[in-house]
Length: 526
Picture 1 (cartoon, helix red, strand yellow):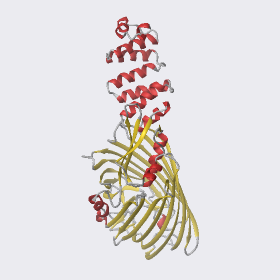
Picture 2: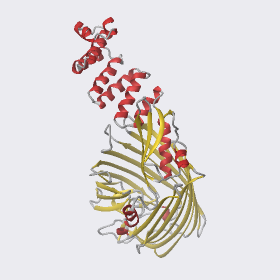
Picture 3: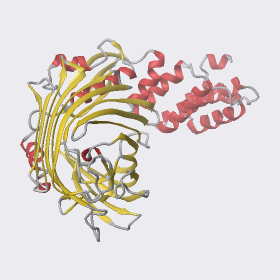
Picture 4: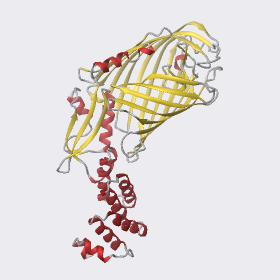
């Protein structure tokens, strides 16, 4: 149409072309848009979209109208519809990347910009500049200045930075430049020494004293991401000393080396519940010492693996065997070797949804009263979703895990479904201690566990993070030994609040066991 080519928008509108064909309808709507008559332009494009559903131009222009009116979520939806019709449309991919960038979704912006050879970054700047060795930090970045920033490189960089374990928060942000290029800002809060300031250090060291625990986390020693973590628990029923030291191997942020030493002196009382009538089923004192070394390798942002070797010794005294067999309470030295891996199964940045998987396989040799071997496998998947287009006001997580033991393990290798018992298999209405002694939560060799939680951020200001929301825990644990295991499926429901200040976090949860009707109010550090 000549009038359209000559940009005589009012003349095109005055003609009021009908929509018997796609082009006149498109020209009419475009002319209205150029005149700023957005409601009429939207109506014209909607008419064209309904009449010519396979023409990608109409959803693109509808996105343009929504964008002009700052309805970014609507613009995103129209552009995604256009790309389903024409996946290689350069303009639509570029436009959608811009929409996601304005919504603060860097991963999604890069996904679509990368399709059209964007964005070009001129410089990488750290805000603030970390104390971490600059060469080590530079090696953690999988990208370089004066290049195209790719989503895969950002995710690999995030995984490497996470392995260094010296930043309490770390994120990347693009800063637009007048020439159409970008600077990439690495925004971070670094954990140096005992903490960022005196109050952070005091919280870190003494924040666990209600649980009779003192700890010292000293990070970024010599500015080389060398971290020392010490914990001492003086509880008379479950004394423990734990220390580990981690560092990047050969100054490579992709390779991590960790050394761990753990010594425990614990009194156990095996019961069927943490409250009410629950007869003593077995009791003993366990002393266990272990030392381990672990190597981890971040291959990319999509997957990583690790190998670990641990040597341990356990001894039992004051034994009331009860339901426990001599094999479970066998003393001696054990050598365990394990290999584990993590992988990203699905990443939908435009939906802010990810699915990750992890797995571990271990083989052990016990030199006790009779030498024997046993093995274990464990694995799971984690779903993570921010349901809103921008921000982190709401967050939903689901983790499903399972584990199985083959052969005859020692007692300390059993799984525990509960909370407050040095276990990560959380059932938040099953407390794993009673009168300070471990043993009141279900134990066994094989388990299944699902943890679902939804949270809302109600933080009053930046230095304090508060999240609240409901949770549902479903699990079952089994063992061939009578008296162990849960025998039935367990379901805990409740609410949880998490408070974080200066990197120190504590969670308060109130849960109800739907099977027994018991309630549990628990506070634990994170």
